[in-house]
Image 1 (cartoon, one colour):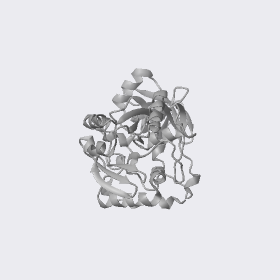
Image 2 (cartoon, one colour):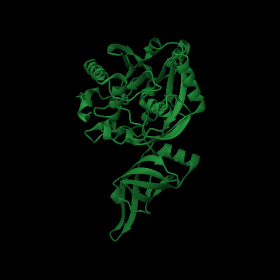
Image 3 (tube, helix red, strand yellow):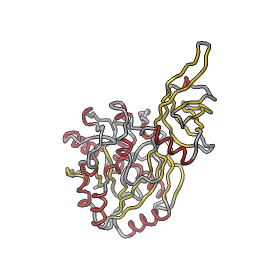
Image 4 (cartoon, helix red, strand yellow):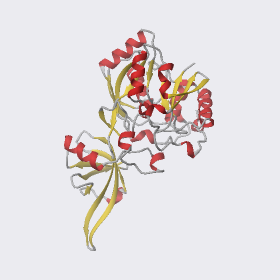
Amino acid sequence: MKLSDFDFDLPEDLIATRPAVPRSSARLLVAQGCNITDAGVSDLPDWLAPGDRLVINDTRVIPARLTGARHRDTAQGPMQARIEVTLLEPRADGTWSALIKPLKKVRIGEEILFSDNLRAELTAVADGQGALAFNLTGDDFDRALNAAGAMPLPPYIAAKRPADAQDKSDYQTVFARNKGAVAAPTASLHFDDALLEALAARGVGFSFVTLHVGAGTFLPVKVEDVTTHKMHAEWGRVSAQAAAEIAATKAAGNRVIPVGTTALRLIETAGRDGQIKPWEGDTDIFIYPGFRFQVADALMTNFHLPKSTLMMLVSALMGYEVVRQIYAHAIEEKYRFFSYGDASLLIPG
């Protein structure tokens, strides 16, 4: 299984840099096996049945991108350097793992000033990342970060435009509760109040799980033999309530449909022995063709990057050739791709 098997040519103008407004006005490609229908996200209730259950990732994205300055007294006088920081995850010792650019411009023990209220000291460096100890904690830190930080837009959007105030709402789902992600579970960005009301009227259930999406979701696969790729780990939790709801849906013969690859990866982690159970921890589950799904019956997801682990995941669910047909159709019909793009509902044949 080669990396090149999951490649395709995508016209640049199909990469969405802003979401559809309203959210549920995005397009929806429905694939039932190899049968493809063009629809809209607002039509989702028509494609679901009473008793179906959507599994939602309720992680909340933090404004993890910070711009600051490092100040230093030198023989030539006071000097400062502009420093870009992307927070990755909190560590057990209270510091934050972070990508720092340029890392070589900051010494261990030096501070980076982000605002009048927020600053951090570099305490360690390892594997190209820094550990930052901030001057604030708890709610004080959250308030200062919200004021100083920007949403960590994916590289393919950030390359086209900087993040702005609109992204603080656009790049956050209506389900966001538990803060800790540095990337959004983007399939859920399509949901708004009108769609939720229509789904509830249809008799569709909702279960909430948490997976804090990390920056590793954007890391490229660098090995040609994809089975040797090492996935990044992300923290997640499936509560006892969510596990019970999902198990009851399966027992009743109804479908469990995760919204997004993050929710799918998490429930498959919690159900590896054939029955979903409460679970909490770091998951590095890697789903590629040949994987046996234990929990998910279908998937709602956006359109993914060429040669990505997410292309491998949808190929595992639908079949390699079917996914090639789906993506060829999406490109031909000019669906919008990636985080702010359109959606697909993938139902295995």
